[in-house]
Amino acid sequence: MESNKINFPENFVWGTAAAAYQIEGAWKKDGRGPSIWDTFSHEPGKVFQNENGDIAADHYHRWEEDFGLMTDLGIKSYRFSISWPRILPEGTGSINMPGLDFYDRQVDGLLSRNIEPFVTLYHWDLPQKLQDIGGWANRQTAQYFADYALIIAERLGDRVKFWITHNEPFVVAMAGHFTGEHAPGIQNITTALLVGHHLLYSHGLAVKAVRSAARLPVEVGITLNMTVSHPATDKEEDRLAAIRLDGIHNRFFIDPIMRGEYPDDMKERFGSVFPDASPSDLRTISTPIDFLGINYYTRTVVRFDPYFPFLQGAEVHPQGNEYSQMWEIYPAGISELLTRVHKDYAPARIYITENGIPVPDGIDADGRIRDYRRIRYLRDHLLEVRRAIENGVPVAGYFVWSLLDNFEWAYGYAMRFGLTYVDYLTQKRTVKESGYWYSQVVRQNGFDLSPDSPYYPQ
Image (cartoon, rainbow, N blue to C red):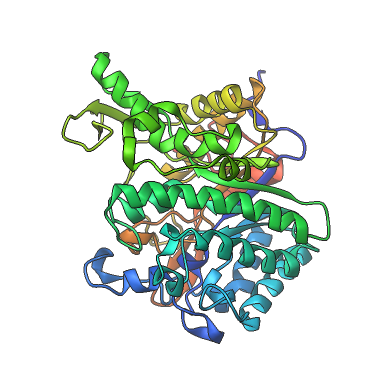
């Protein structure tokens, strides 16, 4: 009988991911300073139902319980971010030792449970004090970030092997400074592009800082949220619009890192508003990395739109396809993307640092949460990851977003991504069927496609 087992390479890394502001809460606890997301989420109308991350999933007080969940599920790795304002309340200057001690305890807690920590240094929570002097549009913030990275690596670099400088600089630059949907809520394309450049520059500085301070061999990389950009029709104008979208979403960020240069078509497209990038800056940005993190959720389908500034393209949603609460479900895009990145940029290793789906979750009468759509989404994307590996792409690991339901930025608590359900009134955790399914995947280093296998998506 033909086997239906899908296996992954030996030593493949299986993990879950989370971000400080989305789960920790304790926003004023133990000396933490305000971040731009504290400011933004407390401004009426910025977040769904005026919700905020003041409490979130209360992970700051419940981290041992949450680490116990990972232990029970057999999770091997945990990607989490450090809150910059918890370490440096003003972004620079005096260190807040209780904040540093908190993450020190977390690292020890993970290692004692045989869970490998992957530390992300920046997941969008810039100290408000730095925003007050220009934020990421101020070049000096890049140096402040490198100083902060040095502090963290000096404290944790004797135990943490895997480091990620930034999470999704595209979102920070564009959603935070062009569309204004995210903190700090600025709407200016010149500022957005400058912020993108400074984020990349700070990444290069931080790579060097972490390596200089770590006391064991480390691997340092960056996480980019990448997409495949498809034209809405076969028309040439749609095809060119898709290339332009790919330029700003993908190539503006990955080309300087991997090639030491910005894409020529983007420089030409944006003209005088494109940031000046000195050869020295580009050398710093292209400091060699040990791995590339990729967050993939969906593809982007683009049609020509002459009224959209600069890019002249707008996203469309093809009819007849399946959608989550936020995006089209398009598993084939992850193998297409991985193959393209491998071919065009040849990173030494790739980690899928986020992949997941928001679907309406609820506790059934018997206490179970039957989130079969999430299981199907994860299974189908993992099948595509395995296909990419078979084609020679060096994918070394996969992290589900997310361990817990959490604060989903401008969506507040309306979107649930977790393998674990969080009742925000009581903070009770309940593992979903997807959590049990993923536990089996981790333990077996793969999964069975047979309809009679445990947790087979119905």
